Structures are given as C-alpha cells and as structure tokens.
Image (cartoon, rainbow, N blue to C red; front, side, top):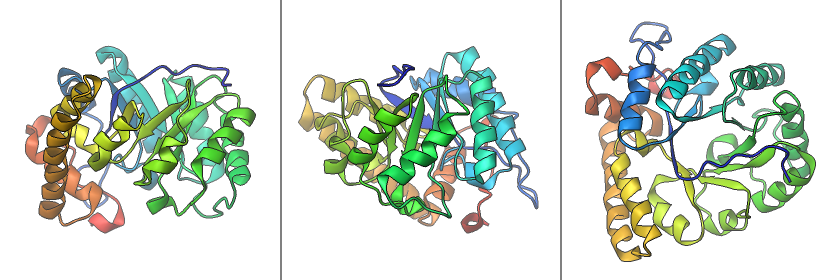
Length: 288
C-alpha cells in the first residue's frame, strides 16, 4: 500500500496551456487565475496541468515549471486540487520536474512512460516509475496510461498490482483507453483510477469508476456533472441521455476543429470564453 494518501474523487479538468499567437508560440500564463476561477465557478474542483491537453511534451523544462508554479498559486487561491504531469521528457528532466512539483506541494503527480526506449513489460514500467518516484517520494504518484499516443501497450491490472507493491508513493493511474474491461480490473479500494475518455463516462461509472479527467470539462462541465449526479441516483437511462449529448458535443467540436483532439478542443474553448481567458493557438506540430 502507498505511504501517501490521495483522496480526490470526481471530475478534474486537464487544462490548456496558453500560448501567444506569435512565430514561436511563446508562453502566456497571465490568464491562469481567471481560468481557475472560471472552472471553480462551474463546479470543477480539480485540474491536471501539463498533460496532453496542456501540451506538456512540447514545452521546455523552464516553461513547464512556470506553468506549474502559476497553477499552484491559482489552485491554492481557488481551492482546486492540483495534479501535475511530469513525463514525456528526457529522464533527467522528468526527475527535475518531479522534484519541482513536489517542492510546490502539489496534490498529486502524473507521469507518462518513457516515450523512446519504451517499456516492454509491466516490470519495466514499474522500474521506470519507481525511479521517478524517488524524486517526489512524499507526493502521490500516478501513471498516465494513454497507449494511442505513448505506444505503450502494457496490461494495466498487472502493472497496478506490481507498482503498488514496489513504489511507496504509487496511488493509481489516469486510464485513457476505450477498453473498459481492462480498466475495471484496475479498480481496487484505496486506488485512484481516473477515466480519460469523454464519450464513455456513463459506461465507466456503471462499472465502478468514480473519477475522470476529461478535456470537455473545460467547455461543457455541466454535462459530465449531470451524468455523475444521475449515476449516483442509479438513474442510468437519464445519464445515458446526457451522455449522448456530451458525445454529440465532442463529435461537433472535432468536426469544426478539423479532427485533431487538442487543436479542436482549444478552438472550442476559445470560442466559448471571453478574450481575457483566451488560451491562444496550439504549439505542437500538427497544429501549426
């Protein structure tokens, strides 16, 4: 069992990173306080920083630290649970980012696998995460399972059991996969399993999930909140109706934005909000 506790349950928004619309897509952290207030007012109680939605893997270490620092201040001010993603970088940089996140006293740290020398077995992945965990040993640590982007196809139930026995601060995973059978096998009392797929929330909750990190929470959080409320009351048919609305909204956003996830979602977010919370364009190559 973990030597640290992480008790967050519910919905967490993976936040966008603000970039200016210049040639280098320079970093803009000026609107993070307003962004945090916007989410809190809409009953979103947690944020994930520097994840896929936040384009963490295309930022420098210094930029990722600056974003984490700004969100740390805003999260404390607005009473938001803060998770920071530190992976997707050279290993020495991952160590540095993990130590930095712990120094900010964030609530949890999320980590991608090694993306070049990819782990081939559950034990390989545990060994990698164990090394990262040494640099943030007092902070709850989660693994970021997103095989469609990472290419790491390791069976999560086996990994979770191994990680729990070998990594003192391991508490769970962000599970971004459509294979709910595998995800359900990861569920265990005291373990944090966050769904990362917006269009299957009802099915996941029906099977035992109680938490999710979904990009659409930035844009239409009321739909996911309504789904969770219906499911708590065992109103599955009503929840399914709202899920259909959410899935249709996601489909519409992707159609308008050209099909790529982050550019489409970022465009929809900017259109929804006033200019003082505009997070600008994407930086990563497919959005140029």
